Length: 166
Image 1 (spheres, helix red, strand yellow):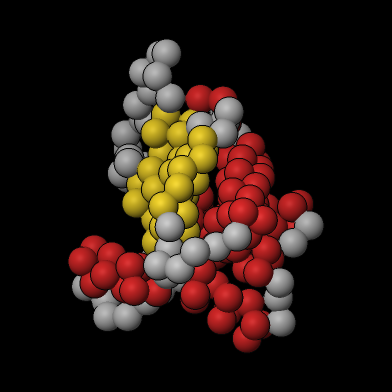
Image 2 (cartoon, rainbow, N blue to C red):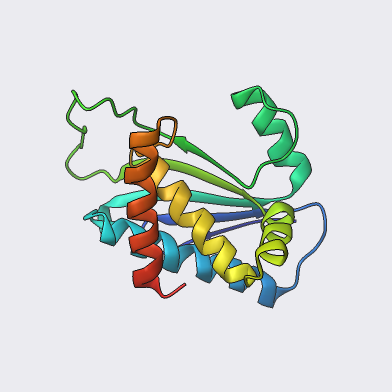
């Protein structure tokens, strides 16, 4: 199933799955992504009216292909982020007046998210919120490849999730 929803805040949500999902399941995914990404951007001081993020919900097979292609890792993962901008601390962010700031893409495996929610005693919404916040922070330049960076990213992630009440 392929579908696209575009909200008024520049958040595009695509759902690409091998199996059909109900309209209520699709609406749940779209509304969760819109709410969480918008909230995370606002908490990071971003103008949500001028920011564009694409969220793709898919299954393990598709995300495993992306994981191998872009990270040279075998198997599925829960979330991948593809920022449009590289942040190295020395270059100011480029913004073109009148055009949205295209932040990038977040890809989430619903298969992996469901397993992780079950394993950690969370609802699917709670797990998706975690993955959406995590992905959004990556789009904004945060990373966890070093202990100091991880501590900063986790602190922001925890604060956003706490404020979101998840």
